[in-house]
Image 1 (cartoon, rainbow, N blue to C red):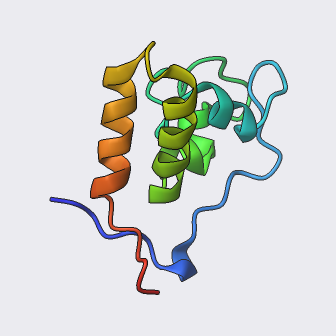
Image 2: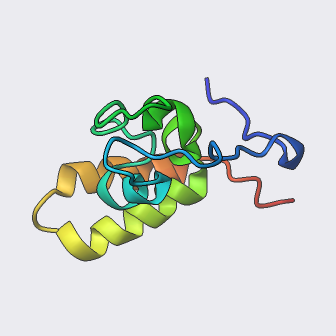
Image 3: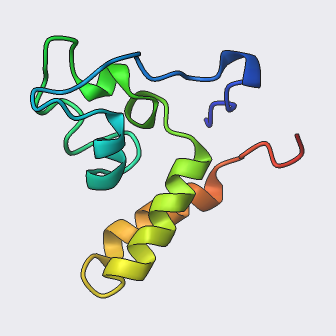
Length: 101
């Protein structure tokens, strides 16, 4: 069962000032990991805890996150990682993004 996207009043906010062990913020994970941060979300934990608990991209990814990553991967790795690209694009496609708002 799919969960409904959060209403705009419950919009996720990254933990203010959060960085990982290397002083990198949530943007880093948007570059190096898939939405939900399945690969690196609990890596390089600093004093404020892991990205999986502090970055919206990791703890509460949106349809837009999946869609953007799908497009990035489709451009970059169509031949290198077709299975992962397909999974992300399927997730993006199956997601109800509240387009009627």
